[in-house]
Length: 363
Image 1 (tube, helix red, strand yellow):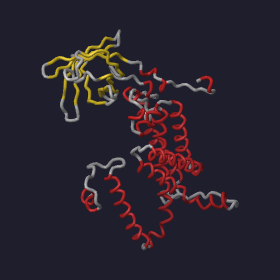
Image 2 (tube, rainbow, N blue to C red):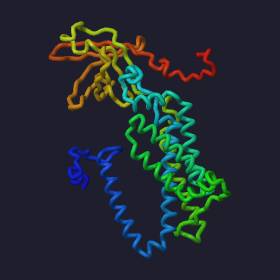
Image 3 (cartoon, rainbow, N blue to C red):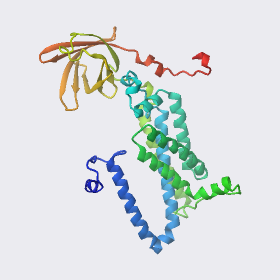
Image 4 (cartoon, rainbow, N blue to C red):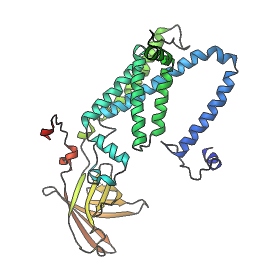
């Protein structure tokens, strides 16, 4: 349906899948809004809807609150364990500031601070816990709105591709808090006494408190399982400390087998990087980079490089652990070329020094 509607609204190219901030997702949201508007007109004309309206809206606000709490809990735990804003990869650290896009700059900068991630993660987890409990829900929703406004501003300001989803979560928080808005106005603006309203339980099991509590505990338990189980399973509670793959790191080129660029296409390379997600990245003298998918056969000492056209190139490697030298041997048109790089101590870079200076003199 999306592929049919796109040309009608003047959109020629549409991403085949529905993912974050794609045109397909925006079209889907538009379709859902149109469908919702049509259903609301039908419901408003139904007497049965009028009878159950209050209970249904209460139930929806509870569902929205629980979904919001799940997302805050999950993203908060991800921050605490450094899985969302991970330590910048060596290729990012050795790329000039001005050549990085704003989203990568933000992501990388936040990833350098373990303390900031733990604090912001704890705030999100605290908001989630407040939202899950009826007595503290209003406080949790107010905190959630503040968190989500900040996140929306970051996503728009740094062009991070979860703008629509973060706006959606902000909308859920506002809808969940909407019954209290008039009371806030009365208390803060009119400065009159006001008491927060406690919404009655929806029509599901209205007279069976034990069933409701059991169901709530079960749902909350699933939320915590979703947030914490992956880390319990992997025993990874700080991604910064996770062992990196074999040969991971940054390498400064020491020598090549040819001096002429015409003779040796790789003679302009000044650094190359082994990425933790299985990539090798070459950086030339102009700081331009080219990446390849990398498979390492440690038995035959062979790198298998795959480019974006799925063309594969095999490169023999030698690694001298004592000198931290990684030597690559490759053939182009039956000519053998060699590039040798020495491992850099990228973890000693100033950006990764987790220091706190309380006075300017201590800098």
